[in-house]
Length: 189
Image (cartoon, rainbow, N blue to C red; front, side):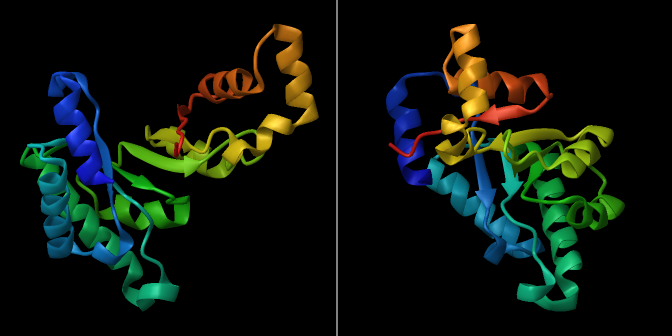
C-alpha cells in the first residue's frame, strides 16, 4: 500500500514532520544489499526522503533459508543500521521476532532494535517476548490489539466494559497501554 499511502500523504496537506510513517522489509528482501534496494524502492513508492520507522517484517528462519538464517537476519540488520546512520530512517526495529530470533541480531548489532511489533492482546499476551523486549529497552508495538475482533465478544471483557460505561475495544486498548505496550489498532476498510 506504499503508493496509496504516499498519495494520501501528499494530498493530506499535513506537513511531513507531523506524520510518523512506518513500513516494513519483506523477508524475501532479507540480506545486506537487497535490504538497501528494497528500502530505496519503498521510499520511491512513498515519495518520501526518510522514514520514521522501518521494520524487518518477519525473521528469516531455518525452514525457509537454511542454517544461514540467523546470519541473514544480522546482515539485514546491518543494512538497516547503515540506513539509520545515513539519516534515511529515524528508528529501526523488528516485527514478529521472538527472543530466539532477536538475540543473534542483538549480539552483532551496533544499534539495539528500538521496536518489536508483535501480535498482542488479552487473548495472546506473549509474556516472555514482552518481558525480553522491556528488559532490553525495546518498545513493543501490538499489532491486532483487538485480537482481530475476537476479543470483542469475550464475556469477561464485556462485563468489565459495561461496569465502566466503555466499549470492549476501549477497555482492551486501555489494557494494552497500561501493560506498557503501544497499540496499533487498524481497519482494513
